[in-house]
Image 1 (cartoon, one colour):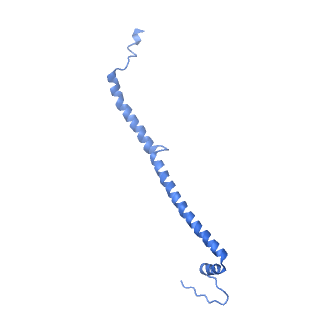
Image 2 (cartoon, rainbow, N blue to C red; image 1 turned 90 degrees about the vertical axis):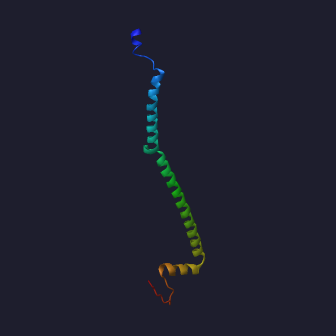
Image 3 (cartoon, rainbow, N blue to C red; image 1 turned 180 degrees about the horizontal axis):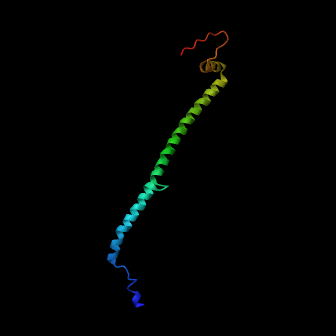
Length: 104
């Protein structure tokens, strides 16, 4: 058994000093990989966050447009004169006996 003791010698304190740079390099490479190149990288999180904010802003804008359209529909459904005015403006309708001039 004494012959094997040379083969399995314990690491000395000075041998650990050579190991530390390798740990730092590997840790740095793994951190860079996670930050920039992996599927769930920080850059992807930032892009997704920006996209979510843009979508929320668009949803807010579209909600306002829907409210305006609902108000316009309600106004058109209540008032016959507004329906006629809308039809004349949008579809170039005319009442019987009206002269219509289209200027483009």
